[in-house]
Length: 109
Length: 138
Length: 287
Image 1 (spheres, rainbow over the protein chains, first blue to last red):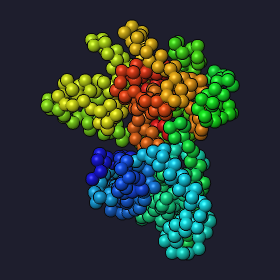
Image 2 (tube, rainbow over the protein chains, first blue to last red):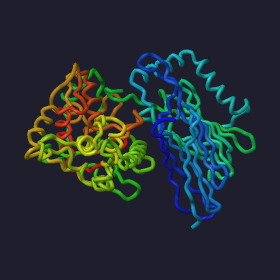
Image 3 (cartoon, rainbow over the protein chains, first blue to last red):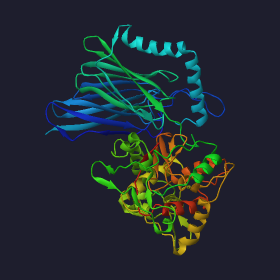
Image 4 (tube, each protein chain N blue to C red):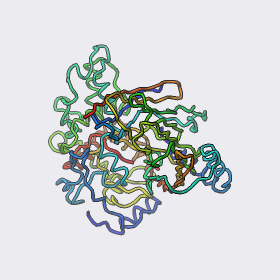
């Protein structure tokens, strides 16, 4: 697991039923491309987050494939429709097999 | 990750070399797009790509895509060592077929978005981003 | 903004061997920094008295950046530097060293640090030493916590610096330049105007004589440090004022001073005082 990986998400506390809300996510990760060499000339192995998903109450909102061209500390912003109160689940998949998760509840206003 | 000035120059020189033999870079970009479209014809209406005209630094360039009615959107950077940037696949709970992220661009280049619509058709948009070279530190 | 003479511009371009381009886009961008719609940050102010013979107005580096970069600092979620503030809070609460104490053991919440960023570097009355936030952190780490000093530019140090700096966000920088600070301030000022390196450039050549102009395609700022630490898009990480000093002096093709050196402590005190009147930005975003 990459060091100091820390997810951040911004989710409104509540939404109206059927409302589309903006979700923002950021995770600290070096996103090493695999194209760079270290000072001794050896290639630094690729180490990126290659997939991100977001589900609302078990329904898929976004399933994203990330390539090495995504910047360090990947930022992703998108919208989800909220039909009922429940959990919003965010999942990041690392090249090394690590999985990072964050879950935020949302209520219906 | 941080690119040193030298590495950035190597990338930049690499892209100039690629421009001199356009088939190579062109082929990689076309291949990435063809993998996504399966070789289908691509229209030019229905997807919006928003990226800065001038990026102060190529390491963190904001990009947004939107394609109402799309199931997926692919982003490709035509001038990068490998063209793929990301692919957004929208699920049933998506509030809009739109998303934003931040990407790395090795040099001034075209960024391309291809949307796959629910009816199986494809749409394309592209935008040139000028990546500036910084001050004395690069 | 103070008019610059053609002679200055020409001298700089010859010295740099670089094109310092036209006056047309010379001005800082006219804009207001309001974070999350409600926190107004003072990013331009009348120059402090000690600078009034060289400039009328001081500007945060925020005004010299492109629209997208400026926008990133106007929303705390869009500002990637906030990740490091979060990490800083974890470190604040984590015990370390032989005393098994955390920052919180003595200082409780990080809000106890409110105000510190606005008045540092300052001279410690007891020891007579110049103290930046980094120096205070290491003083605690070594004398009270029984741990080894953190590297000046290590990740744990920068995370804590980000957290502590944020507690003073919006407060007006007011670094003391008289009394015990006076000799250090004079030393820093001397350095600011000293030409270093094979390129023979001083801080003032870029940040006083030519701010607002372009060095290649980079819009030169006044080199203010009220925004530090910054999330630098190029590095995709935090950069401290000391790191920036190392970078600038290196770019003049000089052997640079160390990030923890007495020289850079004095320079940091002086440069901070050039921003007396601007607000602490907490963690800013620059290119």
